[in-house]
Length: 485
RNA sequence: GGCACGGUAGUCAAGUGGUAAGGCCGAGGUCUGCAAAACCUCUAUGCGUCGGUUCGAUUCCGACCCGUGCCUCCA
Image (tube, rainbow, N blue to C red; front, side, top):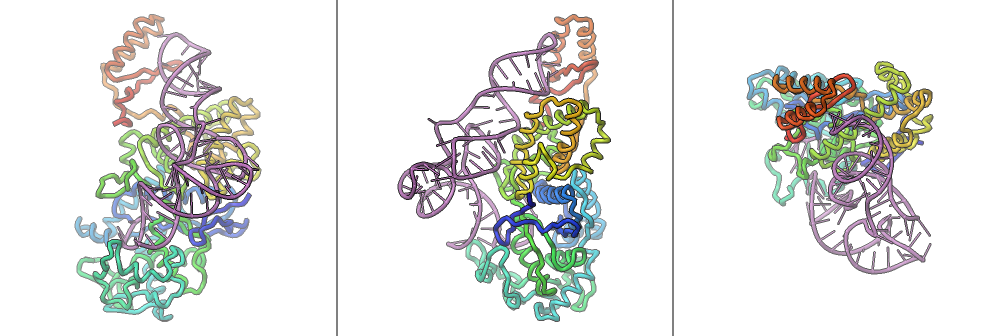
């Protein structure tokens, strides 16, 4: 069983170069922090997280770098609009991002460099490119000379059409705005000369005051933390061109070594069959979904439920089914725990030190699916089949199964959630509470007719009673829950 | 226009040259006073359309139809 991933560049599945003992380097293009990240962004990070979790289970030492873009047109524009310094503006959004990552149970990267903290490295890289003739200065800005880099376009398979395509847009009109100062329209900016619209944001450089272009930060940071060649570089499909293409050009032109061994691109999300975009107003955030009664764990599950190279249509129907599926998984985990006598805390540690995938007897097919280009849908199938095949194990069996079960849950980042915490916390009106208590009393007195009558009244008021062994729980009726808004 | 990707049951979604995993929903059942939960059973002679190759194709080839993405900041 080897870990294989589809490499965008070669368009084939290739064995991941993760020999034991060697540190595996992976870089993920992180967020631009000008607002809350949306679930489309998070699909990328969840997929990257699955790769990292798999490395961990395979006991491959890794360095995982995910950057934060904290300087660009949007962050500058917004910070000025809100009369804040760039860092004051950006800080809360970084905090928000970290919080959301935690809620989605994403493992933290080994390091998370910020663009503004690595300006020096970026400038150094730019100077190297100038020295080697791959870049030139125009009016205080620095541009990459694409004509000097023969391999340009090989990732997105753009070939020689690149000049045409960048000069013309989809409607055939020329993209000539601001292009006049470059040698060729396809040349992209490495360093942007200061403009008044940049406000207080600028750094001194050999070419004058200014700020870095977007692409250069990733080349610089990946070199800084992972060296010349990265084993795996990930990001959303849209980054393939031009961002990653430009990263390749910068890094390889400067360092003369292959930049990336394997490229992994995550397909986009649609929302209810439509492209997710600001103008359609369907950019969903974790908070939006939580307000509708969906837990982050279910969001994570939903994001993983389709193969990462396939566009995923994100719908509320999908969220509902994710939540239901998760409930089953939790119930099964609960059963295994109580059967084996292992408590929750031990289980958490258990997942950290799980068995090696290749040693799995019951869930071997699960890990085989995951290692085959992250076939999560297939792996989930294995998970449910496993549950059906091992419905009520003995104490000893349960312990055995738990070894593998916990490893599988760890791989997918599914945390055990006791069912009690699953109910949304909703304010219960006093009169409803009173009615419910009366019903419970009637039930205890075995006055079932009276109990049923009160249940009926509660139902008419939109509340349902869930009886448990020694108490009861009130929940808003379906159709009135936040989830069904 | 160029380059990619996809069209599998109500829905979401794997998959294979030899006859369709799984999830959700739905139906029936077991169990509890009722309700819920849990568990069990059932649900595609069919895999966009039409041809071709083959003993045999959903899976390979060709044509066509439909959908999506990228080519411009974008996860």
